[in-house]
Length: 241
Ligand code: 16G
Image 1 (tube, rainbow, N blue to C red):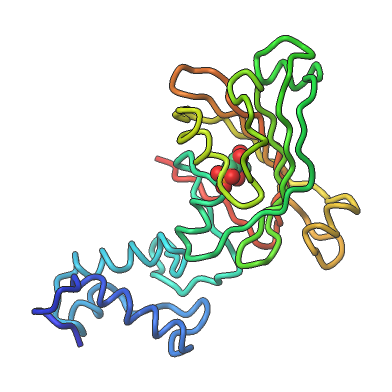
Image 2 (spheres, rainbow, N blue to C red):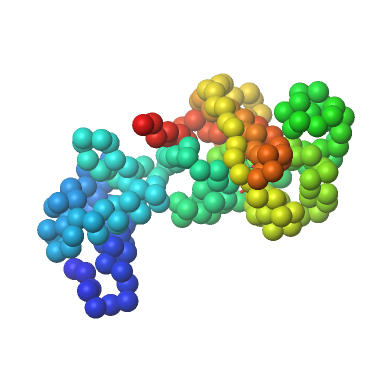
C-alpha cells in the first residue's frame, strides 16, 4: 500500500491514495473517512504521518473536520476560506488546485471620492487607480472585486495585464510593496441585477460583501477593495481560542 523505499514521502502517498478514492467516488461527498487510528493501522504507519496527509488534504479543501465527529469529504463546490492569513485570490485558488482567471470590467485612473480618500488616508481628489475584475475559478465566476489604490504608490499600474495575473504579485515584484496586514468586514446581502448576471447566479441567492483595507509593512494603506462573493460557493471560517 505504501512504498517505504521510494522517493515519495509516505504522507504524500497516503494523500494521493485518498485523493484517488475521493476522485473515483469510492469516498462520497460528506462521507466520514476512517479515523486516524484506523488509517494508521491500514497503512502500517504512525498516526502522525496519517495526520500530515489529512492536514494537507484539508488545506487543499478536499476534507473538512467537525470537532468530536470526524473528518469528512468536502464538497469542492464550497470554497472554505480560513480567515487567518493575508492571501490573494490567485493564491487561494491555486492552493485548492483551482485555476484562477479574471476578466477586467473596468480600469482607470481617477480622483478619489471623499469616502475612498478617507479609507486610503489620502487627500480628497488625489489620484487613484480603480479597477474592477470578475474573478473566476476553473472558468466559473466566483467574485467581483473592485480595488482602489493610491496612484502615488503604484505609478503605471494599469500598464500591467491584471486581467491575467495577480495584483499582489505585481505589488510585490514591481513596486516592492510588502503587504503586512488587512482589516476586513463581511456582510450578507442581496445581489443587484448586474451582480446576478456577472456571477451567473440562479436567481436571487445571497452574496457576501467583503471590504478590505490592506496595509504595507510601513503601515501605509495600499488598497481598499470591495468584493462581492457568491454566497453559495464561499464559506469563511475563523479559528477562535
Ligand atoms: C483578494 C482580496 C482583494 C485583493 C485580491 C488580489 C478578499 C476579500 N480580497 O481577493 O482585496 O485585491 O485578493 O488578488 O480576499 P490577486 O493578487 O489574485 O489579483
